[in-house]
Length: 280
Ligand SMILES: Nc1nc2c(ncn2[C@@H]2O[C@H](COP(=O)(O)OP(=O)(O)OP(=O)(O)O)[C@@H](O)[C@H]2O)c(=O)[nH]1
Image (tube, rainbow, N blue to C red):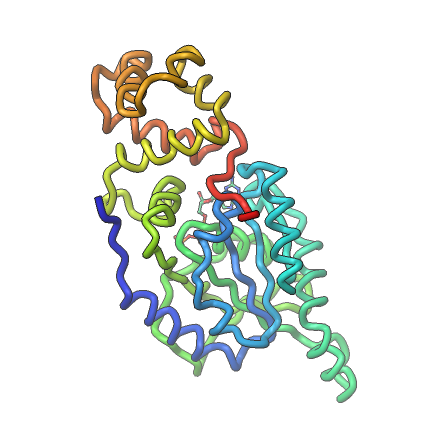
């Protein structure tokens, strides 16, 4: 099973972001806290260069708290500004505004030295599909703003969203395409809904997830499976999936069971789980 990705998208996103870069003071990259490496575009650091760069570990409410803390420490040690966030439930954006101003401190100091008081900082949110960019923009702006799909690199007539602070946001978030030459990266993205369901087989992804859960979150898998610890331990994964279809009254329907498992995982019904750990 091969999950497809399209280099053209990556290139387009790169050109669009590069075009906008000169307008921006801070780049805010949104990643999924459950897969902080797989949900990043590896080219982003090259594109951003030495512009201040914040990484938001979003969907923190769904991620494993121990793992997010490790990711936060790692990214900070790499020199990034990092914030854990649950944009879905948290309306208090003060920590994010504070971090944006901290990241832009050099620029603010420069403008203030030239006589500006409380200068405006311009930011852009970027990230892979479904990581929460629009949700965060709506939170920062304080209302629901219509976010139209990303447009070709338009630098003139660019419109900015105002916030209650001296921060303005580029009206269209940048869509970054993940790069999944590594099959596991594709599976993680598919598992959490960042790749359209039409490009993968749900049962392949479900089996990938089950293998990971068996190794890392055994108790959650046992609970979800409605089977005994012994069965989960001993059954080969495809048989375990089959046994689960029976427990859930899905009569050998692998596909249905797989989609159900992935759906429940995405909603956090299997607990707070990370599909990716910081490598030791
Ligand atoms: N649990 C949880 N859900 C979130 C969080 N942030 C966003 N979501 C949900 O994730 C889904 C995707 O959020 P969006 O804000 O549309 O993501 P996006 O990055 O703008 O997506 P694209 O438009 O596909 O690029 C929505 O169902 C949100 O409600 C979060 O912190 N926690």
